[in-house]
Image 1: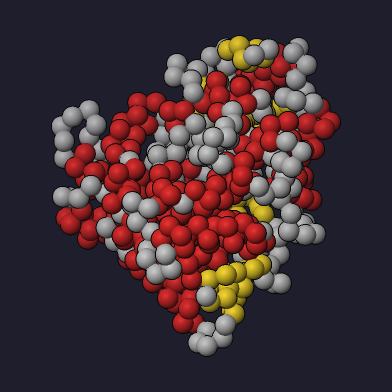
Image 2 (image 1 turned 180 degrees about the horizontal axis):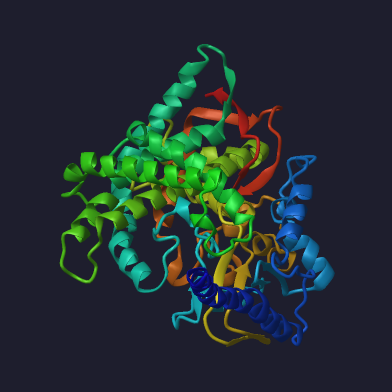
Length: 508
C-alpha cells in the first residue's frame, strides 16, 4: 500500500508542474494579452477558451472554397484568405484572432510592415512556417525558412552566396537546356495537331524540380523524384497540422498519423542522405548550394555545418524552391493566356531581344522589361506566400499600437497586394504597367519575397528561372485559357490553382 501511495505521490509531483504550465499558457497568458489589446480598441471574433478561433477560421475557409469562382477574375482574397475580408468588416483594422492560446494580430499598414520586416534589433522574431507547431515544421525540417537567431544567421551566411545574381546567371545555360527539353516534349506529344491542352501547373512543377536538382544539388529530377513524391505526401499531413491547435507533447503520441509522419520524415532523410553521398563528391569543387554546404561542413570556423543540417537545408530547397517558382510560372502563364494583349506585347519583346530561335542568355535577359513587369504583377496578384508571421519578443510601440510581448503579428501579403488604398481602384486587375521603369511603390506594400534581412535567399534564382522559361514558351507557342480550366485559387502552403491550370497551346 505504501509503495502504491509513493507511486501516486511521485506521479502527482510530476503532473502538477505540467498542469500549472498548461494553465499558465492556455488561460492566464491569453487573458492578459487579450485585456491589453482590448484596451486599445483592437477587437476580433470571440475566442474559445482552448482552441481560440481555429474552428471559426476553418469554417470560413470551407465556406469560401466550397465552390470555384464564377469567372476568371483576380479578386481572390475572399476565397484564398476569407478572414482578411470577413473579420475586418466586422471588427475593423487592425484586428486580432486566436489560434489556440496565441493571439494573431493582423496588421496591414505598409509603414508598420516595413518597420517590422526591416527591424534589426531582434524585437520581431521569425515565427517559422509551422507557427510553433512541430508537426507542421517537418516539411522544412530545420532549414533556413524555419530557423531563427544565431543558427539562422550561420546558415544564411553559408547559403546566400549560392544564389547571388552572378552565380545564378552562370546557371542560365542549364536552365535553358532543361526548359527546351520540356518544350520539345510539348511540341511532339500531339503530333501534327496545331492546338493541344497542357496542365501547366503539373508541367512547371516537374520543370522547376529538375532545375533545382541540377543547379543546386548537381543531380536530376529522376534522381530526386522519390524525395518530391514523399514531400507531396508529407504536405497533406502538414496541412492538417497547420489547421489544428497543437497540444504540447502530442507529436509523441503513437497515433496513425504521427507514425506516418515519422516514417515519411525518415524516408525523406534517407533518400537525401543517399543523394548527397552520390552527388557530393562532384559538387565539392563547385559553387552550387550543395558544394558550399559541404565545404562548410569541413571548416573549423563558426560557420561549420553538420551533415544533418545539410539534409535539413536540402529538404527546404527541394520543396520551397520548387513550389515558389512553379506557382509563379503557372499564374503568369494563366494571366497571359487570359490577357492576350499583354501576351502579344511580351512575345514581341522576346522576339526582338532574343529572336525566334536563340535562347535567352545572361547578356540579354535584363532587356526583357515587359516579361519582368508581367512576373512582378503576377507576384502582386498571386503571391506565393499569402502572409508572414513575426513574434513580438518584447513590448513595443508600433505607430499608435502598444503591442505586448508574446503577440504574433500576421502581415497579410495578399490583402496588402490587393488594397485599393495602395494600388488604386483597379487593384484587382492585371496591369503590368504598374511596374514600368521609373514607377515606384512603398517598400512595405509589395513583398512577394519578403523584405529586409530575411528576404527570400532564392529570389534571384526564382526570377531568372521564371523569366527564362516564360520567354522560351513565348518563342514557341501562343496560348489561351482552356474551357476546362476552373478558377479556384487556394492556399496549400503556397498559393496555387485547386484543379490544375489547363491552357490550350498553339505551335508558332
